[in-house]
Length: 50
Image (cartoon, rainbow, N blue to C red; front, side):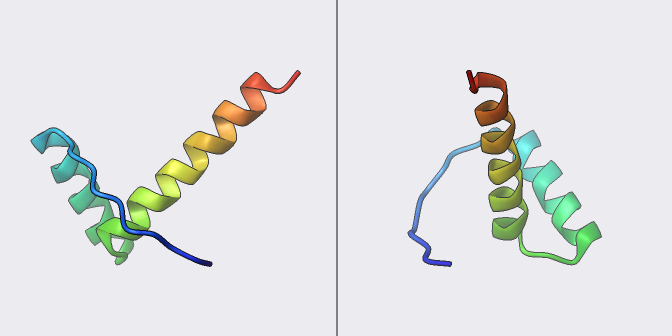
């Protein structure tokens, strides 16, 4: 999968939660964020499909 760099700014509590979840899943923080965004986009897409 092709990737592009993107900088996002999140509140400290969000970063902490992502870091903890990534550690629990033994994945990188980037992987956790990408998976979460993919799930969110799929949900939004299905909810907005006519």
